[in-house]
Amino acid sequence: MSEEIKALPPEGPTKCTQKRDLTGETMGRYRLFLALTLGFCLLLVDGFLWHGPCAGLTATVFAWYALVLAWTGRGMFESRSSQVLLAANLFLAAAMALGSNWYFRIWNLLALMVLIPVHAMAGLAGRPWWDPWMLGERFKLLFQGLFGNLWACFAAAAPDKRAREKPKRTMAVVLGLCGAVALVSILLPVLASADALFAASLEALNWDISALRFGDGLQRLFWALVFTPFVFSLLYALAHPRLLCPPEEKKDLQVDALGFVLALVAVDGLYVAFLAVQSAGLFGGPEYVESLGVSYADWARSGFFQMVGVTVVNLTLTLASLCLSRREGRAWRVLRRLCALLAGESLVLLASAAWKMTLYVSAYGLSFKRCMTYWGMGMMALFLLAGLWKAKQPNFRFCKWAFPVAMAGWLIINCVPVDYLVAKDQVDRYLDGESPTVSVYYLAYSLSFDTLSQLERLDGGKAVTEYDGNGGGGATLAELLARRRSDAENQCRNWRTWSLSACLAAGREK
Image (cartoon, rainbow, N blue to C red; front, side, top):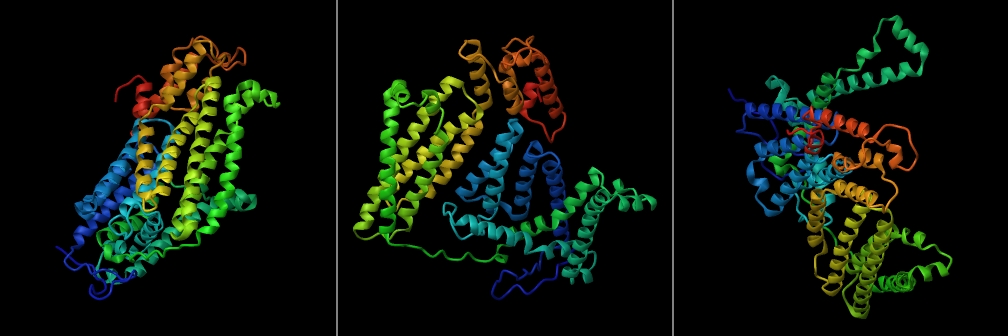
């Protein structure tokens, strides 16, 4: 037996606050989607809030796209850019169930928090994906979707026709009750812990404060019920894109190029002097550096992170100058040449930073941070080359090229076994006598389980502190590895924390 949701008339000008007429769409269908949305929210709360960015979040992302496909059909995934974003998001989600490096997991989570809304709003937004202003537009649409259709959830859940005719009243009552329960359950234990007299009064009334702290199952259900109206509202908006506001037109801002020319002349001149000093240090060797009263080792291991940061500033200045200046007159021609010079100087600065990083790595070996610095410098070099090309061809769309390159670069580094390479380099240097120590605790606990296979190459009977250069005592390496493999095995027992890396480290196949 089908029933229909009452709403405002469908015809007439579409406004952001207007409700869409659902005539012809049955209540049964919307109640089914409401149940599926509640199930998704339970998975989201259980997989993410309780276990963090692990395999549980992988399942949540895949479930999200299955739910969106059921709601909207295949139309959202027809364009090539949408398919590329879908593949990238699924890959980043799958990476959480494949690797066990928490740095990558956190960064992948942050990337998904941006890319999933950008992808979800792709069919509703007016700006193309490569336009930098599309981020603001799509997140505006996201908030409109999350909060603009809350009535739909309560209208679909209403048990009778009269209640469906007053969705706002129902929503207010439900949200008020949920808020009251949440606030009391949070504030009452806090107040009891803050005042001993208040706590004694509650005990005199035979109130068990701990009972107010819901069990895990009830807590997850509570938060899932809180999230469900917002997720249902967003899905409803994706299925009915007329609900959202049209994008505002961006007004081009152009200024006189002379101001940028003056700034670029000063910056380019500064870098010429800086690079002259750098070149003397690079080609003069240790003797020249130490003749100036500076230790060559100190000079070699300093400055590469600052140089990477400087190139980011230079690239920003280059793009701002080319995009915001009026393209006319002699000042514009001079500005293009100065931008090309700045991009070239930035590439030389980046090469200098890479050279100094290589000197440092040759003395101290690889680490996760140093590997990621190499990756970051490689990506910045590509962006600077694109900036150099834009100085030659001002109509070149930098973002249209840079966004997919950045995404591809991040996907590629996710495929590189960085932790394994770091551990292999550290152990090789120790066994070859190039380094007197191995940072066992850093490799075993700060990085992923991929490092354990390399640490097994060391003598497991020695105390861990011997490898760190602190003398004897403490647990042996074999004991530490056994504990880490036990940790890996415990993670593999729960599908929410499962990872291929942990299972391989535990010596089990899943």
